[in-house]
Length: 126
Ligand code: HEM
Image (cartoon, rainbow, N blue to C red; front, side, top):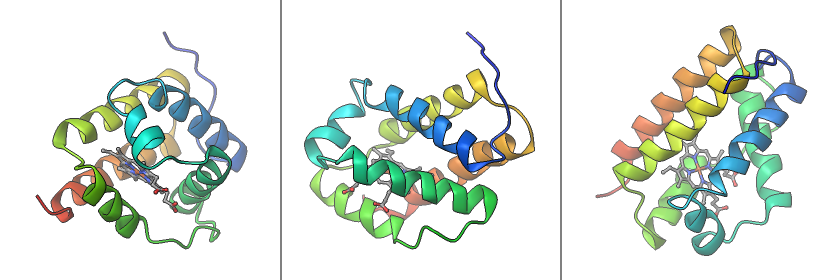
């Protein structure tokens, strides 16, 4: 089910991508409870952070200045983030990109997400 739109080369495209990715995460039986029940995220606060984060990684914008690793460490202490959770997160991330986006910025997003997920898993205590 491909509906190609564009590359992730502007804030507008990145924001739409994050909305699409989170629509899937928050409907996913494995991941949704971690966001909604454990972390109890407020989407109006959380989504702007995530959008700024990806605008920093892909476009070099400087808006995001928070410590992502510490936030996941605190989450992991409440509810262990397992290998299967990372695999599911990455599957939804890659698949949402494949459905709608293509180009060098999109390729970079695929690569960065995989590398950060790998690094996060290694860094979190087992
Ligand atoms: C098992 C996989 C993952 C799960 C279940 C997960 C879950 C979460 C949750 C529940 C929050 C909100 C925490 C809070 O506000 O207390 C969060 C924040 C965040 N996550 Fe993840 N995450 C995962 C992997 C990743 C990866 C691989 C990345 C980066 C590529 C990432 C990037 C972020 C960012 C940027 C934030 C926002 C932190 C902030 O408030 O500034 N996450 N994550």
